[in-house]
Image 1 (cartoon, rainbow, N blue to C red):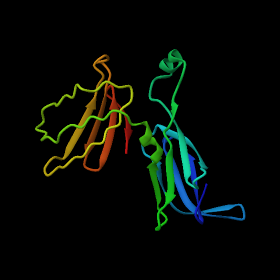
Image 2: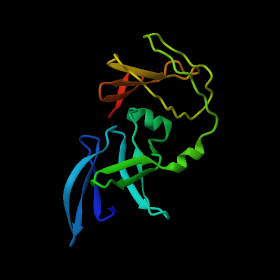
Image 3: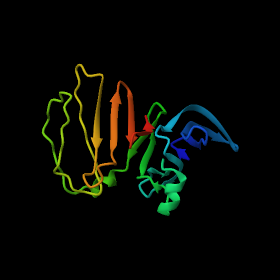
Image 4: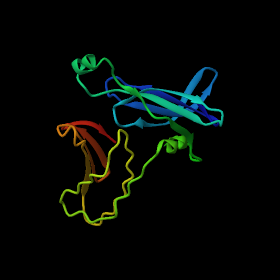
Length: 183
């Protein structure tokens, strides 16, 4: 995919489950990589496709693979979903910038703000939510903690939940006790 005077090549790796990107030049049917990285470290974003929109932005979508067993996928009759759109651009230093499409903010409806609070190791429960979609903006100020986390659980399905943990520079997401993503 061309971006400014550079091109970005993406490769979806089956063994690792990751999508790698390479930034370089493309000339005379030859791509010459100059830098590389991991496009998405979650192991569920796969086979990305991109296009240039009417504003000239490079918009990327990917297939979100699931972690459910094959039997569960077959029983449900469906597998995976398409990702939300991401905008790709090159920074002045030729590094890749990835951000959510600004248009996604139009999907936001009712807001709930929880007042800042000190976390003492005790569980804080927020019961005011009733939704089928959720965006969480969490700001953490830590002076001494080496890790913190957030758990999301639907009261109608107490056996299911998602736990988000931040430890040093590693973010992990677990569903029903099975790790499904690390970035």
